[in-house]
Length: 377
Image (cartoon, rainbow, N blue to C red; front, side, top):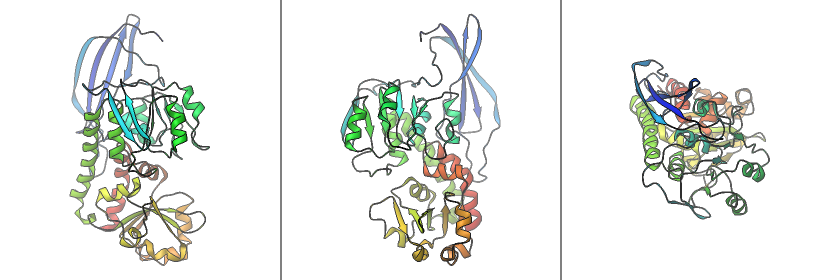
């Protein structure tokens, strides 16, 4: 689509202390058109650990500036943010070698399950997103919908694995598949479509931290400094919780998912859910840590339910967890059940913790920390 002449006016609307929304007003000869472009902090929403509420009070002033320029992007067509000086060329090292990127990508396909969040946090709208189970119809979590700003990327249904043909149909110039299980054959297929980046060589599948994923993606799209800034802002949210709630620091804690075949899965610190608990100040119980074996989860049988003993246990809601656990004699015999030290979170919160990203973390903190402190204080 050809570009149209626009007169651009930027309007900054500050929300609370951390979140800033800007409106880009595009005026042509036929009238006024408005689109939103958010220059976001990592929090995206204002998180205050003491009260854990979203501050939605707008500040009293707006900053308005007008100038000349040309820019328009159709929803869903992909949008790239400004590039930092000296960001290209860049080479991304990963499990299957290295990928040189010579210029700012304009059409990024997010093949990794949480990779779209880091892109959106950097104001890059992907042309394709890969949804986690329970994501919205737009293919992202509830926390990321405002960042899409009405764009409708192609949704890559991962039910039957990576769909090479669908990805190719979006004509990407960069494929991001970090939070994904990609073997070398699939990597070669993806690389034949566009430069492709996958997990680092030292990381296991699904085991890349949200910090590393954000840094890698930031470098790939030409915003390494902004990526570091977003990471620091997000880490500060965890620090704020630890400071305001010292009673949870160095307590033991774990995240659990029911095994439909019987028993329980608990997540290690190789997984985003385990990393989330660690960042809050919790330590994985020693009996579970001893069973890690380099995996992102530990399979605990029903007869070994006592291994779930911990100061706080977060239970994901899958498989009617609340109902099943209430009828589970082995689980109910544990101290964590008798003392009410387990929390069955709702589906959006469980997904936010499972997809720990710079967008989902503030959302999850706002919902889970009050539940935790109520049970530990």
